[in-house]
Image (cartoon, rainbow, N blue to C red):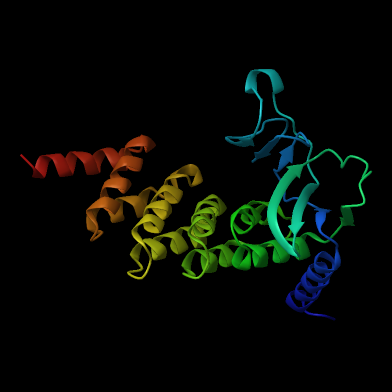
Length: 260
């Protein structure tokens, strides 16, 4: 039996080779999304969808109004369009649901459906090595892929100084959305790491504030109490103020009482 990681790397290599072999123009592929992801096939992608409810995370572009659209809730697939110029990928667009329009242009290469793990690995590699917006925009579709855990890769992206700054910030944001104890540990490690730039630390503080079920509150309280940077402590206090958590109120009372 082929080990899952070896198989995933082989599939990633096959996809990268197919993209590299395609001519300049649009290169597109699709893959299965993880549970809870839905979209309208055009300008809306929602996360945490459950029984017709689209949850609190909705990403939209263009002219779209919640009151008009409701919950699109078409559960995949994810569709990724890469723009290739001079042999390099310089743009990544992502859709969920719907279908591609008929390719009436010879400059469109449709690779069809690919395994979700291969798609995620290819996109994470593009995020690590892609230039400009392509690297930044490759993070999001990787997060949507079914049957793969991406937060360790996001943590590596966030810590790698050679990766463009905006890509690292995107990795930090989606690391926060991964939630769970493991992701929380990764975020707090970023905040504590003396080699990480201040702006990335502040992005990690924001990501902690976005964890579901107030999972990041304890970490934010520790940061607000002990972090060496006044700016990072201030950010933590700000996001604690948005949480309405009793633990945050107790901290505010403690700080204000000490200043009397």
